[in-house]
Image (tube, rainbow, N blue to C red; front, side):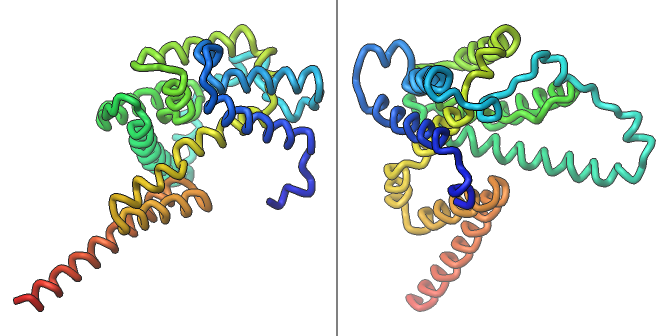
Amino acid sequence: PRHVGSMNLQVFVLGIGCLAGLFVLTAMPGRMLKVMPPAVWVFFAGTLASVFILKLDRHYLINVPNSVMDGVVMPQFGTVLAHPELWLALAYLVITLVLIDGAESLATIAAVDRIDPFRRRSDPDRTLQAMGASNVASSALGGLTIIPGMIKSTANILGGGRTQWANFYNACFLLMFVLLFSDLINMVPLTVLAAVLVFIGYKLCKPAVWLNVARVGAEQFAVFVVTLLVTLTTDLLIGLLAGVAVKLVLNLWLESLWHTLRNRSD
């Protein structure tokens, strides 16, 4: 809200238009939507509107470096070993990333399982093993840590993907575009991506989800609401810890209540 007064009106209108387009196209039946999912249609429409009508400045668009190799920075372990004062901070950082990535990975697959049309269940052990191997490989090349992609998985489901081959194809096309078509990617407004993110966030937390949780029980609804609000105001790890804490307190309270009622009945 603090940025409302300084926002670019063209960017705001484009983002709202793309978001509205996603809701409209998702609700419309039609053969054209089977060719490409609604997010792709909005992606192209928003980019064309930016290029030919709005002509947005460069800093409102995606910026992919000309050379992918600029992002490959090999770790300098020798420098770390030569400065013992960095060891404690490094250990703290590694442990923090492991905990955050692990918690986010498990939360992500749980969310994806809920929207899987075939009601399949992911294997947490395999997810954590894949995450660990991927993070080691990515870090060795100076890359960021990797977690299961909520956006990618949701887009795959909305696009009709049924197996893990959808992830493989996604990675292949992503690599191809980054290597060969970075100029096209740099034409895409950031607000278009923001609209897709907001739409997918709504799909994961739409009113039907709230109703389903409320039907399970009041205590589950309380845990759900606390986890959601704390996550939105802080970050995912703190939100998960808050949800676990609330669940623990409720369990202790319910157990105490059960013992009290049992003693009275005796």
